Length: 286
Image 1 (cartoon, rainbow, N blue to C red):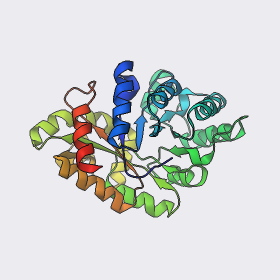
Image 2 (cartoon, rainbow, N blue to C red):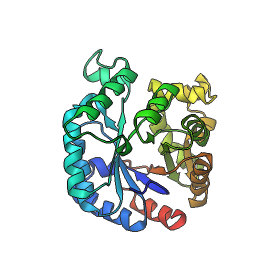
Image 3 (cartoon, helix red, strand yellow):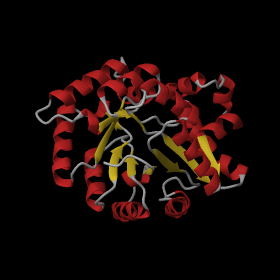
């Protein structure tokens, strides 16, 4: 499992038209991306992982993330074993606790003690008849306590919606061994107004979730930055511009200690597969 270089994080590969998912995944592998990351906000995520593994032959397929509140660890471990037996060591299980407003919206009061819930889920994976090895899982981690767990009970951390400075802090905390695999959102346009039109509402939705808001506060941003989605915060979290600008941001993450950076491309139509942008970035960065 090669987790160097650059990957793609895509909700389209998870929820898009199955025929295009298959075609796009094969092309992304041919373009040279090292991993394809998909989210888990409902539905059979392991089936989606299986479809991507079937559509490809070399690239790593990763969950970014498998929502632990939606799954039983014994079932997940059995699914992991079946997928690994069929496709080899290409499934990286990213696991996360999601966000209280999202989980409690479905079942009030369910989101409690997320760190303890993560530990219990990992215990379940370890105790299953076919355990999920620590080397095949990473944790969605932003703050110090979850990062500590990612370093001790998984292969590393998959931080989402972060800056190169956060990557530097994660590497410093985890040390030289564990993997640091940040997501980086990008918008391929040199027009600032267009970038803000595409990304500001999207970003505001994430900043309304406490985990992300608290993380950017730890990075020195203010409540005003968060509520207004200030240009300063927008530019820190979203790499926009041409391929060279995106490449600089990815290089900053690598210089800060990232082993692998997965890029998430935003466009005006966020349901459409951004295949042109994936091709342009591959030609420039890979």
